[in-house]
Image (cartoon, rainbow, N blue to C red):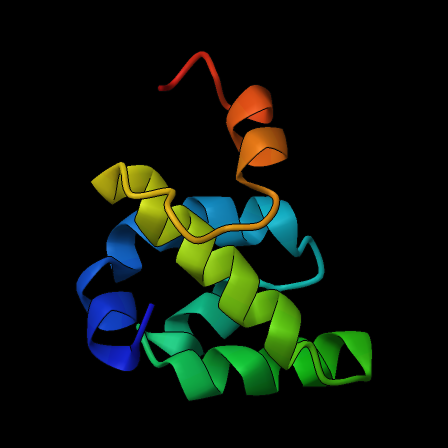
Length: 87
């Protein structure tokens, strides 16, 4: 997921983002406002380390979930088995 896609899907991303990273506050979400770089910065501030790879993977999976495009993920089978009720 690139910056443009992250921004376009921001409203849909807020709830799952908060569920995944519980230390992120509502104020943090308001600060992020669909900015992928700010998202990474907020995670670093809250968790004390860079989560760039994890952020990218998470965002790509969310986008793939919405678009139905799971091709290219090495762990697609595991991901699909965890989310089979949605597929």
